[in-house]
Amino acid sequence: MKKPLLTLIFIFLFFGHAMAQEAETTSNIILSIKPSETDSRISTADTPHFVTYDPAIKQGKLLLFIPGTNGIASKGPKNFFETALKQGYQVINLSYINTPAIAKICKDDVLVENSNCAEDFRNRRVYGDTPFSLISDAPYDAIVSRLTKLLIYLSDTNVEGNWGRYLDNGKPKWKEIALAGQSQGGGMSAFIAKTHRVARVIDFSGGWDYSSKNKIANWYFKDSKTPLDRWYGTYHVKEPVASTIIKTYKAMNIPEDNIYAFDLEVPNGKKAHSNGIRNIGYKNEWIKLLGKGN
Image: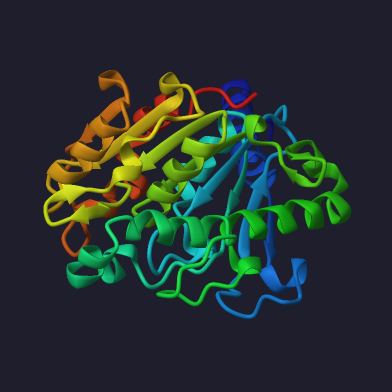
């Protein structure tokens, strides 16, 4: 017996839509690469980098995400990454040494002895080329070294991703890279954006470094190589250190319109501090923060 025409149309639309949705979700390429695969010297914090892109979308800039303290790259904010893909970015969530936290080291008597403790700490963890005895990070463990080795590895092993365009003479091509990070990682993103002209920087509740008691660190006030209109900062109004985070954003001269005060209800058992990067309710804000990657 023939099915009514309307029924056939419904079946076609329903399954056509379902297949389109499936194609949309399965077109993403996801790569899991241990840092030691890119540099055999690495043994600490060797959980895999999370790498993803969508070959169905015009490939644009790289979004480098730097997780916070105790963050594991493979467990990063997938909804945010999916939004970034749709905005035309390729995404790397970097695995790096993210413990101990700066706030655990640069405090009390340590700050009395060295008011630039936080800056020295970040220099060591980001670039690895300055001495800092209070953490054991080796130079090859540094964030920039790990990123560089990963991009070289990807350019050799994943031709489709065209990763070599994020390199310039074997170093990160910062103008093609947008930075984002949460907590310690947000601070690392801001720290890099101070010294390199990047495509964009999004600081999600990015740390609260001090130079002395109740005085935020001096590095926040330093000039930025990245134009100020490319800077974005977020915080949740209910996180305990919101007022200090706001002070750091003002010290970095982030434009007022580029600072987002998140205020959605935080689910039971979750923390306001990480809600801004995890809550899909902020998708429209994420789109504004990310802009177009391609």
